[in-house]
Length: 348
Image 1: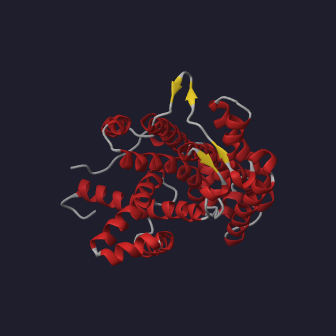
Image 2 (image 1 turned 60 degrees about the vertical axis):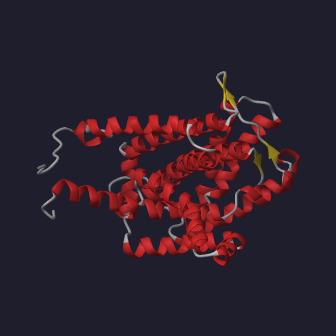
Image 3 (image 1 turned 135 degrees about the horizontal axis):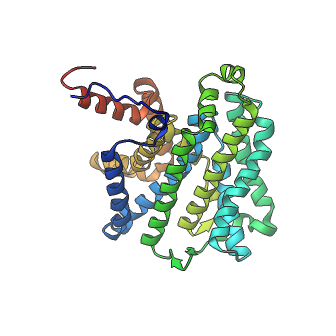
């Protein structure tokens, strides 16, 4: 029976995990995800790839909205910016995919500087509306700059080959997305336990108290904006590679709502919550389709003809339900289950 878990050093407080079991099962999970594509069919493999790509984007948004508390409704704008930056660098100018990924992150980060510098003096709903406006503006800019973006025709994107390794097959692409997801997860966890991450959380919890403590609000908000946009741009590049074609139609506004739903369902401010929320939200439409098919042919036909509208409705209901009944998200459920298991048969 464990009575507590006490830390005696500062290194123990900031270490990612001091549990051998956690590290062991993490390695087992990574190996399982690496080998899973060899045993999955094409349909299941596509879901795995989409989940891994979405994890990268959700972790990026989590830095801005989860760690720092800044609501963004237009993060799809940085997603499409990263996708076009990669496509233009690789497909139009012939640079290597490594340069393309760097371009995707850097261009998105630079665009966030242009948007974020004047916008971060706003808070709450005003900032959310500003980022929402940006997502529409960037689409019009892409369509008008047809001399480099091909306008509405889009850009065809080939599967990359990095350091002599070809990612042409679906299995290899899934493993590439897994590598990016792991690196992004480790990076965001380390950001959270760094000096900068603690400043983000202080701003989220009480910005006036953070200012009194000497934290430069505008500087750290801008750092959060740039870091989040850099990661989101890379996710956009991965999504463009997965689609094999980049156009503004491939990045609808619903992706922004989906990203916010992921953070709310998973648990705001938690990297584990972003992962759990991604799995839940990505698999939710397929689970809903299976449920509708069980209700009969008419219900199945209704889902087929109105899938887009039903998906939006389902996201709305799920967000309301979690905000009302489980505001800490799936990660809160996990913590409750773990605490109950550790303290059983006691309640606390």
